[in-house]
Image (tube, rainbow, N blue to C red):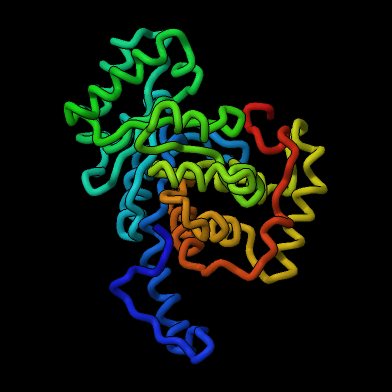
Length: 313
């Protein structure tokens, strides 16, 4: 959901434009509502992950502070995985009872029984797993893929996990995967820089199938904010400068604009972003309350797969 909650009324002028008082009400409602659509990525709680991450793995003491800040700010979802180093263990030592928890499977190379056992372990550690995603699409496309999906359906039907889904890349053709497997949710890359799944209609098709959409890489590992790019991405410098200039011309900060773009898409149910400090968590919450600026978003979209695919960095 992305519309103003139906329980709140908004007055308009005769032309249908919100009045001055209504504008203030809209801002207040959005400030309260949008953080509920934020998902806090936790890979940095277990690994020194991210091209813009200068702090490394987040210490456990700060994990607890970040979660407290997120909870108070209205964040509803935690996104983690068995393969995120110590992330699940860190969450297990914190208070996560009030959060909706999304986790992911280990690889099928370990065997289906091991995948199921590790999923049950995640549930025991975290107290609950509301959505379990297949971490690698290739596992589903392997000879044992159908058996894996059947085992996960059994976990859902038994009530061990709340729902099952798939974490996919653009190249995995998420639309076809959704038609074939009918997942409850899909996690896909989507950002102001990477608009491919919006432009080709995939987001709409997923929503038509009733799939809950979790957008990840909403800041593309912070690439939009980096001035000094690592060697594999030096070729992206001019394109990123152009996007930042486009945003600056319209008075939009890259952080708030990038988040506003994702949250403005009605198909997106959860926007996942990671942080490495309480300060970053506070900045994320503040950015989530900023209304989407009047921007030609298509001018921000990049097409170079070498830039849009972190695994190629």
